[in-house]
Structure formats: C-alpha cells, structure tokens
Image 1 (cartoon, helix red, strand yellow):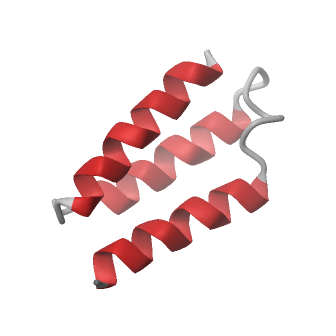
Image 2 (cartoon, rainbow, N blue to C red; image 1 turned 90 degrees about the vertical axis):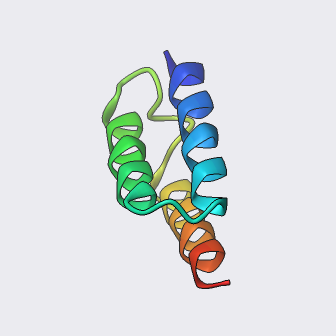
Length: 62
C-alpha cells in the first residue's frame, strides 16, 4: 500500500515539474492521506511531508 502512494506522489511531482496547475495541492492531499494510512505512517512522517511540499514549491517557483 505504501508503495502505491510513493509511486503516485512521484508521478504528481513529475507533473509539477512540467508546471501543470493544481498538482501541488493534489500532491499535498495525497501525502496527508499517505501519512494517515496506518501502513504508511512510518514512511511519511511530518518531516517528509514538509520536505516534499518545499520541493514542490521550489520547483513551481523556478
């Protein structure tokens, strides 16, 4: 289950790099879902969520 989240987030981040609108919010929502999933909670903690969000914002700004 956790790997499904990871792969989906990678796909979304790839789309963010193409500057498609709405992808940052979609990635953020999916990361929150992954964090709340009991099977994924050890993989996506708050620190990872912040890291990915910062990456999304930096990619979007450039």
